Image (tube, rainbow, N blue to C red; front, side, top):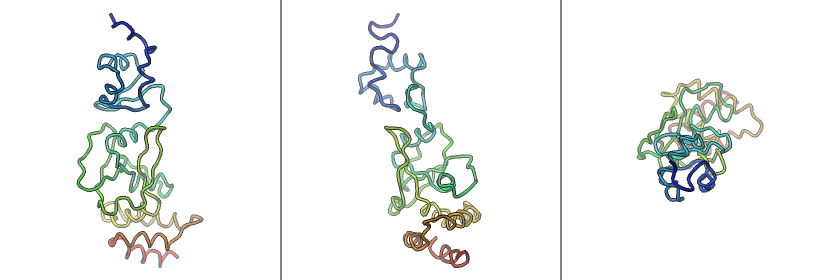
Length: 202
């Protein structure tokens, strides 16, 4: 038998919770552990991972990205994933490329994430925000920053990814090689090869 006032969804438990929330956030909102698991068993919320939940009535969102963003607030889409978001590559990565400042711990996630550690001193350069739902957003590197990262890591990611993205970007209206090179000055491993590539392509 259910405790009085805790049957169904009419006690306002869901209304007190954001679209995505943690176990501790639920308790802080006055939702008991018993009630939380009852909501899960009733199919009113779903588990995104250990101690992380999502309301079933929330708007549609990429739950893998939501989980990464909630587990690591600095999480930023980078490399192939970011280039694909910007339409600069046709490659579809098997895992989501997510950058964190070097020194941060590797979050435990269910989502298929490939974590990358970038220099904290340049981490914010070219970083924007991608809204996922009204309560959650994840970082996303700009097209220019994504190209720079692909060039400086071309020994690992492959030169075709870097220079293919550069060629496609140059064909777009508003592409500014001077702005790209200006940003590249903060990344010595990328500036020279970018200059050489631009001399050939322009």
